[in-house]
Image (tube, rainbow, N blue to C red; front, side, top):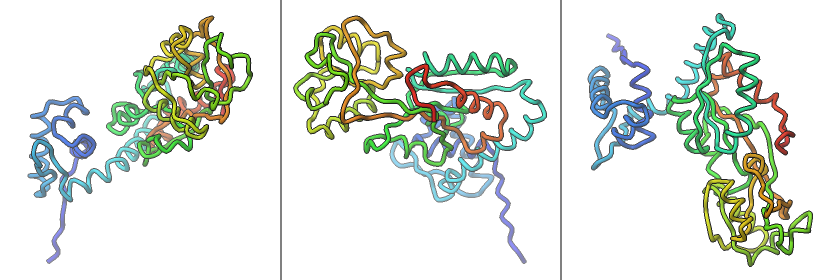
Length: 316
């Protein structure tokens, strides 16, 4: 006699188990998926009854996946990619007359790259519906993993040991769209403002204004290469605030060029290249199967067709 194991799996169970793995709690999984906590708990209980296997075990106020739950979580990304591919095969029949794209991008891309992309989509694919949300790269990648968006425009600092981008996007498809230099922002009356290229070592005694947490980490890494640790007096993820604080004489800053496009440079500030030089890369992140979804493939193509020179970027 041969025993046959016939697990009664469904997509919702796999999504819930993946969300539990990401959040560590039933409540966190419910929040990620937009469900109530009792609904998630009941679904897990029903799934365990169908499978005759425990999926989670409680540890204090949190939960831990069992071996069976871990197996489901490990396959979640592969399953999501396969579903994207199936969706792509079906959408081919529609020929992009209808469809939707759920997109997230970081703040400075919101006022530069994204408007140009949306304008191109409106002309070339007027039937596509775009839902857009602004999010920093770690949050955007998390949204992609949980299935609440289809595409994420992110950035990373190559070679920066503190940059979590490589690990956070592990298992997802990544395409580099642009690269851009970083620049220092100085008060227009600063002694080094007349130099076309500023040696960062000459700013070792200055007070610094840091940007977002990942930009701050990059600032620390580049200044370490220049032989000093910057004295950070202020921190804000608002690029316009950073620039205006510099113009008001509160310190100096380092920003990527795209931030200077998104925020107007006031009369009291100047930008200069610097040594050691540094750069960041701008990426498009998606599930691997998204390449077969026509609406997502069309969005990727239009992004690659944008001219980065308009913003001081190098198109890859």
